[in-house]
Image (cartoon, rainbow, N blue to C red; front, side, top):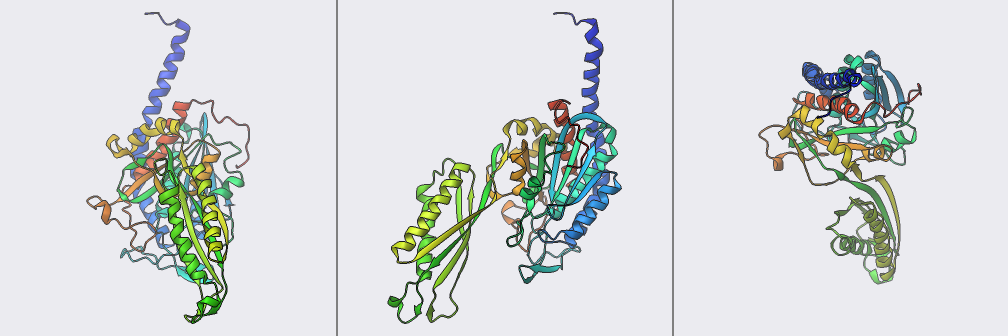
Length: 446
């Protein structure tokens, strides 16, 4: 075996000591996150009791910003309307890592009987609606607030820069408003300093508390919303031969759309889901109306298939309508991209999740036809988005109430695991990728 030159020995010892120091931070992270758990739960329950709709997260943003400022972070508010971005500059050189939580709730009436049940109502597109955190975003905010507190307390050991994204309107901005992750990216949150990697978690009601599930590559579907306007000819209900019934035409279009999935899409490559969720036509039962409007969503897990599905929907709607004497107009609006987990980054960071949750509590899963606008952050830097369990132990997966429903419920007793994981990702990414990444001379907010 070759001997090591004497001049290299001090350098090797320094590198070795640095690695040991990094590894030894795991118990400290665990200690701090565990001690903070009661406060994290308190935050989550306060937010749950005071939910706000997309692009209307005013009080939520104030609550978050006040906490971050108290920690001494650089804080900017009003990002993408109501978002909050905070920057923590660590005491050691290293990359720029972004961590994201979404803040908005949904127009859903809560049925779960809990002390912190939401009774909030708000205006949504001109209607008074109940508001509920029916997707767990309150948990995401609380975990990221806890992460910021732990990392701020360890500032001298933090390598590089950490950017905290508290994002509005993940569920989609109302009406024609702009918002969400796409607007945050458009406003430059991934730049100045440029983000080297971005991480996010989503709590899941059908995964046991404290466990993580992930998938490399395409993980969650893109989401496109479509509108089909079918124009017929109005007539008396007793004389359909004198008109062109847009309701009959529309039902034929709905049925034929499903052949795109069952007969035209290569489903062994990736799933495709087409759903018509809204059908409006007519004012009286004895009048054949002039127009019908269909609205729905498209879910795909491959960008090429996404574009192919768009073209097929347009062709089906227009040709079916034409064959029946009507006219169809189709518009498609892309809400989210495919949420793609960088395979190299995923493989690299799995040990971080295992350190936080335990090796047996991190498993690979199949892809998901739900969507996430976290996907937009992944267009600017390698990204990793992971599911985190919130289902009470002993509950059967099939009995867990789905997201976006009045009975949605999560167990918040292990939110500290999410905080530990976020912190481990920050330290481990810097250790594994080296301190050269993310160097910048910019001092601007973002």
